[in-house]
Length: 233
Image (cartoon, rainbow, N blue to C red; front, side, top):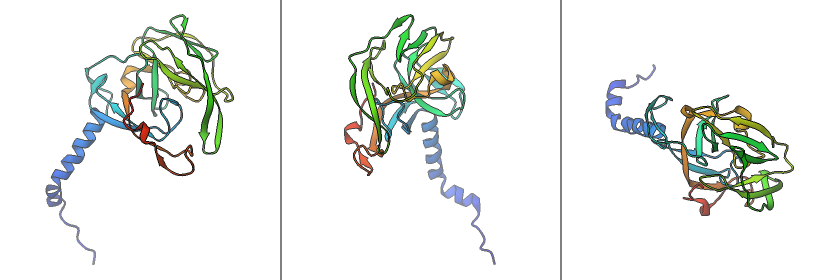
């Protein structure tokens, strides 16, 4: 004989505290605060694969949980903010840096960013190596990009085929131009175009935890304690 399952209603009543906790946690994560693992190298050297970043979902808008419906605008996205958003073409969740605001004119010439008709300044580039996969490294150039609002490090990979030029475009109202700090290894607004404000999820502000899984410290999973709690600039 088949064993009779216990009645569902008493079970739900017994576990209602735990179920309320799960519901509250889900609502918190979808409306207030979130964390985002970094799966790729598109934001190197700022963020690395194996980083887990904290995301403030209330940085810009209060949204109805699990939707893009804005209940209350809370702040304006700023140039150089590192944000999570859904890609306009696929809906995939990505993390990039805002380099262009609504009304800005954006162009790219020989891998250098131009903003409103003027090239950005860059410190002298430093040469180093960059991991593309375990056991596969390439040359890299790194420099501080003087983006208004918050200068930050970017890097280029001269040996990697990439889109290094883009004709000037003017961003429409409510649209933002996103780029990865790893300029030659990032699928960003150069590929899928500007991102509408309603697609923004939140602003990433700190690295929560980090571990090396690409082999930079050997073929073992190694915590990177120096990155834990680091502010994202």
